[in-house]
Amino acid sequence: MRDNLIFRFMFAIIFIILLVMGAKFIWDLNKMTNRAGDNLIEKAQIITEQQKAIWEFMVRNQNKINYDTEGNFEYKHLSCSTTAMGVGAILASRTDYMIKPTNIECRNVLNMPDEFEIGGINWFKENQNEKEYWVSTDLDGKKVFRYMAPLWVEESCLECHGFPIGEVDMAGYPKEGWQLGEFAGAFSLTMPMDIYYEDIRQNLFSNAFFSLVLILLSVISIYFLMRKMVTNSLGKLEVAVAQIGEGDWDVKLGDIKAEGEIKRLVCHFENMTEQLADLYSNLESKVEERTIELEKANLVLKKHQADLEQMNLRLQETNAYKSEFLAIMSHELRTPLTSIMAFAELILYDPSLESEEEEHYLKEILLNSQNLLRLINNILDLAKIEASKDQLVLEVVDMADIISSVESVMLPLAKNKGLDFQIKIISDLPLTMADPEKIRRVVENLAGNAIKFTQEGGWIKIYMDWDKEADEILIEVSDNGIGIKEEQHRYIFEKFTQADSSASRKYGGSGLGLSLAKELIELHEGWIRVESSFGGGSTFIVGLPIKSID
Ligand code: ADP
Image (cartoon, rainbow, N blue to C red):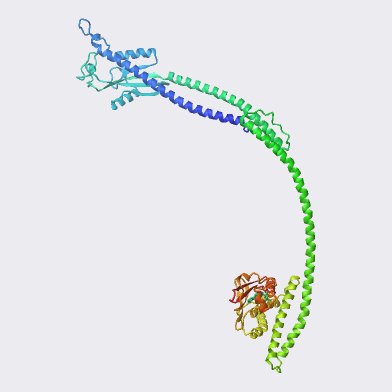
């Protein structure tokens, strides 16, 4: 029921009506109570004014009452006070109203004030400008309105109540010694309030009754109107939506009777359903089409993959043939080359050699043979690496040994070219596990390049250090040769790449030395980089991680 639109709507309406009615009830009650109070005061004022009028009438006619036509005085006991009391008694016998004159010191015991009246008397004495004093209270278990109006001493009062004090007046009472304008007591009126409360009750009851009838009528009309105009159509629409949700597109919305927004909603929904149904049927065929296309593409892809795999195999074979060919060729070239170098050295260091020209030629033969040998070695090594045949042969290595081995080969070449060749190794360089032959090849290639690209009179330095923080051995090979342009730095480590083709022609070389050095160092999980500027010399730095010796 909580989900039902009509009931939610009705609850909301009832709640709002009840809220408004509640506020109106409080407002009415307040208004009626105030009006009842005003009526009571007005009535009380009239009654006391009437009583005062009787009082004044008796004062004015005292002579007429107490003297006969011959002028003889005979007190008739119809004083103003006695008359007021008598009128009050008659009023009390006919109605529920009671009125009496009262004062703290009074001649008649019936006029003695009660608690409320004493309060009123004292209040008038303190507030002499006030003309009335009232309160709603309970008396003998009934709600009553009590009202008091003050009396002030006038000229006519003095005859009986003035001076001399104690003198007996015509009524036989001793005079009180009142003075003009003094407080002379008050009229005290007691009025029943039941009738007013009854009036209020009836008013409220009739209001509540009409409100309830109004609520009932509103709720019933809202219920039927909502059913007819909203929920019937919405309910049918809901059924249609559920039907579509279950995949049944054959919905008929024509029998929904609706007006205004709901009618438009039904129209939009009908359109949407048609479009969706159309889309859905198209979608199925499109998905089918796409699936077939995808399957075809997949087949083509598989064929390409197979082709690629075959090509890859062929490439691998070709590469293996190439590497093998290079290895054989290099080996075959190395043997005669080492013989040439050995014989050239023999002749060179033969003491019978005298001609300087011959010595120069022999040195040229030696230098070029060494360059050629290095080139062949590089080709051979690269071929091995590419064929993945090159494994590290790890052993305990003292870097100082490697450097001195490089020095023995490089120093004569440097000297020959008129270069200063220096080596510096820090004293506490640790031992490490490495492939000494490969490290030697790296340093030799770097030193060979340094000698090659440095002019006569220049210098070459090999410096070995230990980066304790990174736990690496650093090998720095620097020269003050021709240097390398900044933009060439990233190419020179690629195979068959040379920084400057004109320089290459001049200095010779194959573009393999650095790429081999990089491969060999990376086999050791190390790194190599260059710091150089054109014309400002070059420094190649190698970082070789220290591997602990088991
Ligand atoms: P190459 O056999 O040509 O020396 P490398 O791979 O050893 O082949 O070197 C690649 C290129 O890097 C060289 O051709 C040269 O241009 C440049 N290069 C290498 N080392 C130096 C160096 N110390 N000074 C100047 N250029 C160098």
